[in-house]
Image (cartoon, rainbow, N blue to C red):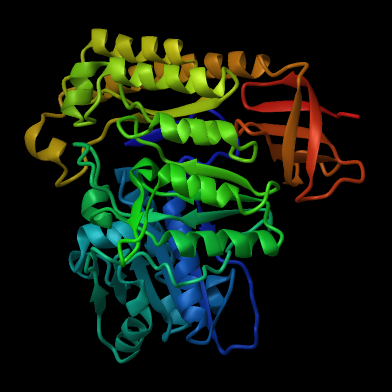
Length: 473
């Protein structure tokens, strides 16, 4: 699916990233160098940090220059055709490395590897390794196999693997914000989605290991963590001896209790699973950010049924009403929307627009539907909305969301916001930026402030993407 984000801001939706992230230079004196590029969702970026930790134990340093690498890994996304095309184009650009550095190994990790499996080795001759999301512990052995001249592959999907015992190496870190993976896989069978087939069944990570990771991050100076999962609201971990069971509300409470100065975010929520218990937990803790990514995908109940989203328009609106009632009107809400799903009519498209008006989203990730191989929709439904109509409907969704984003930001004018400083503004060395609780980017003069501090900012101006202001006295 072609995905367009309404705003160019720093935002944590799991499907959000267009540009690949590459490993940074870290020279600890090791002979072998690892270069890793990550595409797609924040879960992929989190996985790349796990992969780096595994290979550092095997004597690899990271490099930001693939020309210096002994092993090049592309951690891939399969959620949209465009995402896979980017990886294939990247592999073409890497072809020359085999001539200049004949011993260099190239591996494809993640969802695209899982979807195509051994077929990838046939289609992309320069690829030496194909490794699925649950097989990263096997990478040292697979690298040995490839070094011996073989084509190495492991795409086994596990029902237990959570990598709970591995401390991720923070790649591309600003030293302030970090992601903590709390679960893997997905049991929701949305008809348009490949994730259950590429990441396997849902399993939750040991709550104790999550808490230890959060405590370690805070001790190292990080001031915000985002708890990641395909559907965080279905998190449920039971101790091996049966002595306790922790649901997502309980996990949120434990992580928020690490320290009042540790902000907690999470993504992504499923409308069928988000509970009042979670919302009340968010309300009790000032350091749990008041922002929820709640993908709707469509505003029409018949289309939602075809998508197998397992909720209705009325259910979704009731959950939004609960968010507003418990967390207040200032709580940020974002969404995903798909334009032109199978058999969608003009009236049903209008229902999506009216849902957006009703909810008043702060920002959104917007897609034109494209069929993904082997999904339930590809097998059972006809992709019968023309590309021209899809594009026009998508543009209407984008135009509306841009108006809504500006409208929501205007409500923040002449108010003071608590902001966690994440770094220097891209547009001016004299300004810093951070985010408020509702996940909105705020830009303000630098002064003598520094990254990692909390600051109160009085907002004086805004665009649809950004709040701007002055440090409050």
